[in-house]
Length: 383
Image 1: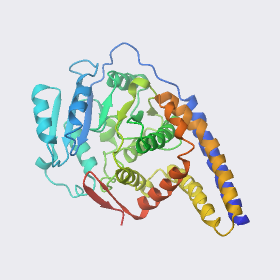
Image 2: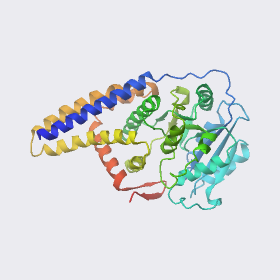
Image 3: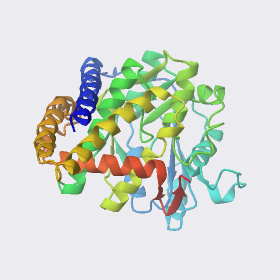
Image 4: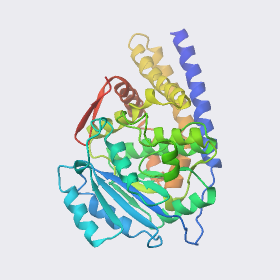
């Protein structure tokens, strides 16, 4: 046990340094306040949708309320082989709103990677018909501040960015599942903002992204990553970062925040997180791989130490002490992110949910590497 404790202690030191780095970077990342002057950039919002009939009315209403110059933005929603009333609702909405275009993937020629890279193919189809110089992507279960596009576009013009990652928050009722998702997602958002600001590694979320159409075309879009079932966001980000390392930004602005709904079951939550974890060994950006590996091993150490306690009771003592140390390392960072997103009321649950978070990290990471997941009624295997 002494040798294991030494290794585990060194891992926790490395983890503490990593979290401290993210915390410092997040706090130094300036908050952007958009000017009142209307942006002049033309924007195309692209949203893939599969079986989203319950979310579409709220989504479309939120998009129609955008305070952006008429004629400078359009919305393209792509029906990704839905089996519900998604296409019918979209078709009806497009007849009453001229800025909305609808693409039906079932009407397009099949692609050799269409059976795996579903979302990438939908986004690619949208971009092929986009007229805007700035592509903004989101998901069908999201809602937006009225100044969302105004903020993103003005930030684009302010920075001359080629790629912009922007904030996303999970909102829902205060039950255990929703609180757990929200806290986990706040951590990911903090790491995203910090890593993009410091250009430490490529990280973003497809629910709130923007990039120049010309930059997308210059890196040949999803070429060479179009066989992968996930990663329409981070893989593309790294391709553009490789070409324009000084032109990738995180827009830390309250009016840029996209609000998304939590998944409604623990099974769906794990499937979502396994899907995210499945990308880890495909990253060209190996900097994030090593960060993820450190996080995984640090969490795995707690499980090993806990199991060892059944043979060596002293291990339980060390497990508790080191768990408290881990919480003290993480809490200030996550709390600072929660304050920005207005989610600090949920931080009171942070400590008690730590054991569950450790277990979930281990399971999702393992199955992301060796298992399979289901998403939107589709089953994808890693093997």
